Image (cartoon, rainbow, N blue to C red):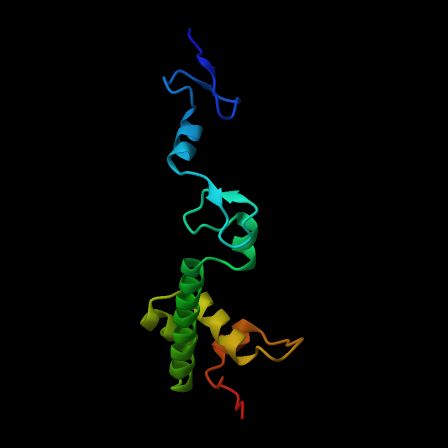
Length: 139
């Protein structure tokens, strides 16, 4: 059985490829190393041009845009849940109307309504059984 030789780049994996690189190093070799756009001290292969530390500090623009879109979608969902609850629908009916689980509806609703109260002893099951649960006046 022919095992091949060690990879020329990493020296860990064996390879029989004519280039002398293992499969992992062949993938890495396709993307050239360059200096980080931000700190210019570390080298990176990332498409954003940021090294791992600068990516944590600043984040890439794509990452920021996707996070904003997710936050906007979550806010719209929360607002829709609050509007339906204000109309008197139960959490179960809200879940079926929005095609999301009742637990997600309950968690979103109570996080929005009781976000400022610490040590709340509010039970999710009691509120779901109680049809008189109304949104408290936040004004």
